[in-house]
Length: 257
Image (cartoon, rainbow, N blue to C red; front, side, top):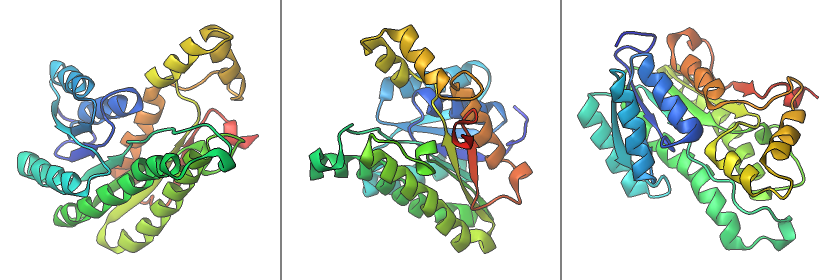
């Protein structure tokens, strides 16, 4: 397949479903070899199968981003399999508990920070040598609108997404001279399997739940995984060669209010 990312290799964490799966499919559709990584092996393999069905090039690796030895090993195996690494998409993340700060246990706080912040740190740390080897590359970190503004819920999640925003800027400054660009993406509410599951459990019913989410966005609807995936595709491509340390907000106008 030829396209905007022909000859490139991308690693995507949390690539099994939702936004991550859409990212993998769009990157592969643009010609990249894609390493799909996740802890959900069945869904991860399904993502690879969909890519291969349309002629794309993808492989699946089981990866817990909180495990440094596993991160180091996986990146080494991806490099051996594909020959290089040019793009890292740090997409893996969890929402965590929805409690006020004074009711959150240390274990609940750490669970979110381990995946959302430690995972981004470890994957960025271990991909840098391969990006240097490739002569440069792109790291794209999935933050959130709640890395820019906040709300009275999910304190660990909001803190973690704010951390990702500043980590992206720091790394952008640290590695700019080496041709390694680092940016963050800040989605609004996106209709993913996780959000759909929440809708199905909502007391008011799934339709009312979705309508309430849609009303939060000036455009009048919530986003789809591809809305974020196309943003990732742009930041991964040479079209974004002058963009680093930036925030790509894809939120239907949510943060403009």
